[in-house]
Length: 417
Image 1 (spheres, rainbow, N blue to C red):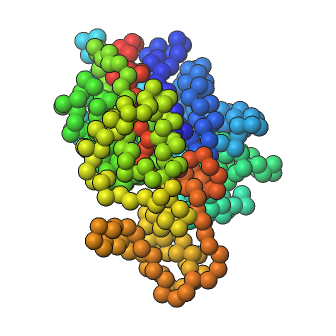
Image 2: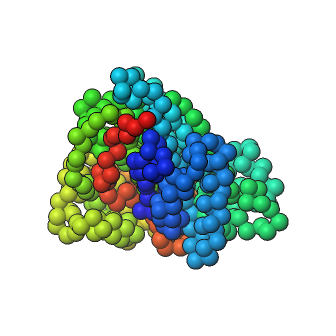
């Protein structure tokens, strides 16, 4: 897990009526996301006007510039998305609305769920294949291959990622990958909900799907939004997401008796236990929260009972090998990207990719119409941020621990004017 998050209520003594909620989805390592977790709210809290778009844009560029000066850390990267809530309207001395400002770099998301269930996306993913982003990448001497910057990075804006920002003839705002944010604004009312999340949660569902899950479970769990996040995470896994999951759910409340202790929710283990890389990170994550051995397996089994959809998942012994993992990756790609990958794999020979069901064996099959010639491609590790051959992250298996964060109470917005 290379994700981090920040809850600052208030963001600083200088701005007692402003709160900040952030998620940072790291890739190629956790140094960038850990840096953002510690720095962003402090920098934003120092600003004279933490809601001004130009001021926020400059702050993010400065934060990125500072991180890039750290030679031992700067190759790591991270998304950066945060929501700023400022109380704006009161009725009978109670706050009934807030001004919402959202700052986004990368492909994490912020979604408003209105009181009637309407979904209002506040972010647009920064993807290399979009025309404006692709043009900038090309002008900077880069290419977009398989919807990735230089065939590697899956987003066109990020904090860090020095290898895409080292052209000394270009300003930071014109590099292949930049840290210039989108800043959007909206009103946030009593009865609305706000979801701040990394892209793993919407990898296999739409913004509207996520909003529906939140809205439908609010009546039962309004006093414990972490339970709603658990339901959201489980549905995402059932849908087939294999990325990491982090999210904050913010409900505006004048007062709250929310005082839950931390609770660890183990993710499914047995369906993925043949994947050695998954097991390594699963165990490490659980151990960080104080769970090991039989107790951990008991919690995992409890989760698996509620997720029968995972019962038929097969994994190659010792983890997904290059060929098996490649087939899994190919099967998940959109049509145009899949075709290009298959063409590379087969050296131009016509190929098909299909689902195979023979008795108890279920999986993905790749058939080449003509004999394959050329190099064998062994994709050993594919992480959300980059395609690489390095150990350090895994896209196979599932999230190692379903953990609805309860260490910071995300339910009360300060009633201070």
